Length: 178
Image (cartoon, rainbow, N blue to C red; front, side, top):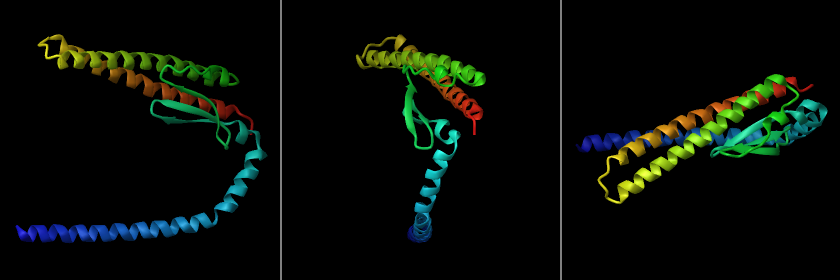
């Protein structure tokens, strides 16, 4: 028994030493890379104003069920989309027909997903409230299971909507002049 503990401690110490060495190597590599950062930022600033693409291209960054749509290399936030948040992505990408079609898919899937997820969460909450009242009701598990299914179905559609948003922005960016 004591031998197993000693072996476990020895293996842990070796693993910790290995991780410390890797972290030290990584931090010194990061410091070397930061030395060239001013030159890279100056190059990026020149390239940003050099072509229309760099100032017109779109991207999105998502966080907790919403996404900020940003323009250009500097990342100017144009709008926010997400659960029941309306931003006219179709109008934003209207210069590309393929992008407009993908933006319509985004709008439809995002609304369906938001609605289904909200209804599912309400059903789960109602089921938990009924269960918390110590009522021996057969509807409690049905509400919770149906709500969980609604949440799953809704999140699937929300995921599909973000994929459609990504496609819409890709089509738009493809058609931006370079």
